[in-house]
Length: 72
Image (cartoon, rainbow, N blue to C red; front, side):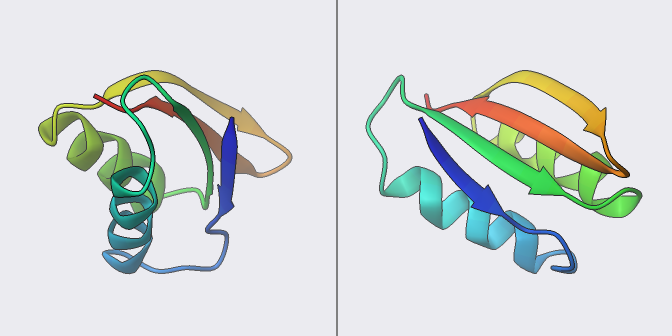
């Protein structure tokens, strides 16, 4: 289970960093991504789904979002 903290990282860089992290992982592995409210929590999950990965959950916690992605 890997984690990446992208709080304070603007679009589209947060998606790019998430994508690069996923590319280095094995199929079926999970990645926890911390995202800011607003554009990041809307755009990153949508882009990840478009890439064929599974969005397991997106939960709000302490003023930011925690996204769990399973690599395709």
